[in-house]
Length: 337
Image (cartoon, one colour):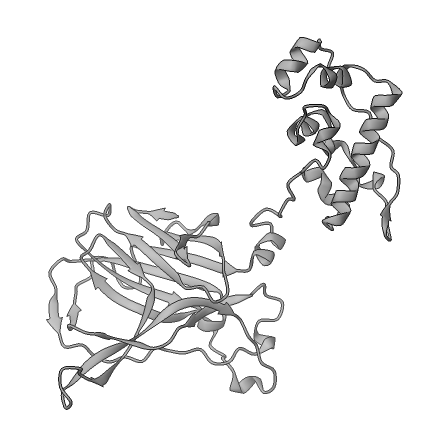
């Protein structure tokens, strides 16, 4: 969630609040904030705004997706949800009479889609820098306005559309998703309002920006952490009364280094077992640190370093390595366990 000057802004994808990463204050002077979210192809999104703490009674706002203005509205409500583009006015037939007609406005649901590119003559593609530079972003701009307004007749306006994107125009840029529009639907209109802004047009009250990209891109840039595979012991029954957590407590898997694992085709080679640090402690203290399921046999296993116990550790370690190979996890990620 982004918060600035009393306004909360958050994005929901497929009905669930999206996790935002690396909040950045892009411009202190212009109160511009930016964060990153994982885009999901084909899923609709909603931008939710909470104006309740600004002190103003009316707010005007715009929503841009990929540099294209899709929403422009005014509200006196403390909260708003932006989920549809507002398009041109069209004349439709009324259900109340055969000849009756009414004016309705086109609306289309906002959702994520894959960015597609074309080749060929670049002159036939999108060339506007204000569009190309904003691909993969959602921008919300808010102005405070005077409460009093004047009602006027609704006017039709066409939604600007971006042209085909040439592959040369985005070469070298980490882009994966853009905003696409759903099926056209029609909503009744009750007129428009003319307002007087408190904040100048060129100095909005606050601006929120979301950069939307695939999980893989955000991970490669270090914006979100790489996935880790949870550790699961496959032979918890090797310790009488023990569990997978007990084995994890005894084995320090993080001590495994890259150069000790030699994956071969079809099998894992035998590796050298690192010395396992065993604290100088008595049986009573070990029993307190391990779970209640570990009996005295487990305590003796920790305190004694006979060849039999070392063989057990070696066997368990080799089974862990076989499990890693089965999951196709690169050896270098083992230090994340």
